[in-house]
Image 1 (cartoon, rainbow, N blue to C red):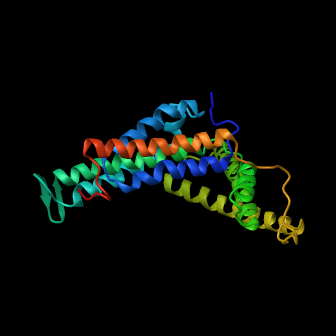
Image 2 (cartoon, rainbow, N blue to C red; image 1 turned 180 degrees about the horizontal axis):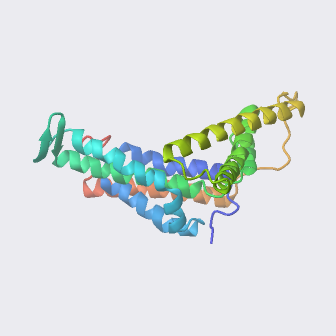
Image 3 (cartoon, one colour; image 1 turned 60 degrees about the vertical axis):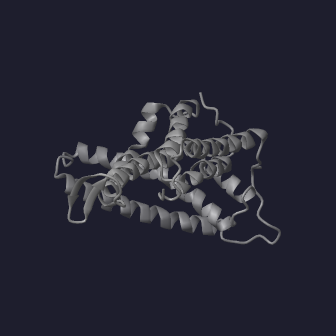
Length: 254
């Protein structure tokens, strides 16, 4: 089940901005928790099951504690002191800020995973050019780069299988990673140069006198506006609940 099928990719971008930007105004657990709860509930209905969300969102899950721990150690000291060593000072306020940062990283990062899933690069390019009216060269370059991401993954899998078949995959992890990274860098540079030459030969670098035409029309429908309204409502609800319960802290200031 995917309620976002047929939604313009631009709607996903605008909805993401409407959902996450207001959360940056307050550093508190309540507002971020409301938005995070909505994301976890809505993810399966948007075509991203919890298992897939966990698999694709591990960088966010890793970044959350990395952002929270420094805040717990070096946040503004207020209230009871639990630990102090040199510049590290763990207090009630620093722990509250750390918890808020932890939840807020999840509340801002996981919606990106949900709303960016299964976006077709061509549809995204059509939306950026026709709906947002972005420069044509930028749009074409972005679409070409997005197309190369899938090829990048295929190259990585092919190199892993080739090294395993040749019996050279069981080397040190650092050496294995460096050799893969260097091979991918070489392949990416070669493919990028070929793609740039091909696009220039086909006239993608020319500026049309009467504007460039597009093969497919990209517009916003009623469903797109509903999705954006829901995202705005959730962010407003999160901030409103934080204000009502008294946990709203503008930029972390009580």
